[in-house]
Image (cartoon, rainbow, N blue to C red; front, side, top):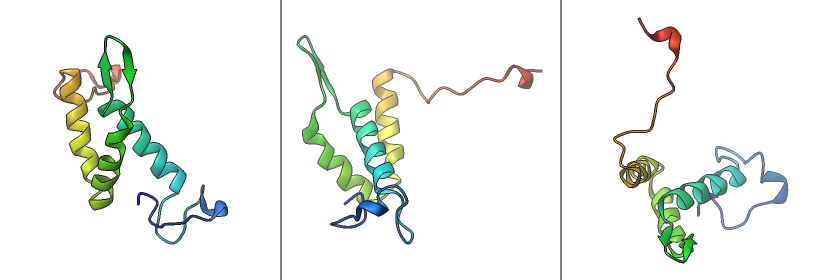
Length: 93
């Protein structure tokens, strides 16, 4: 499970416990990644494709480094080589 446990106490939703992050933050991040990477777009509109969420959760539970794999998948869908970098005009020489 993305939350690190089968059950979560309500008072631990925002703070987390021991070395586990906040369950609310973990779930929000997973939903956001899923909605960016796994939707189906068709003539009838946007379909969030919730069936793929369990696959993403399993991958992230296996290793948090799967985030980078999903980032690469997202960038391929956008036809860019990497996420855009914030340009700071003071850095130009």
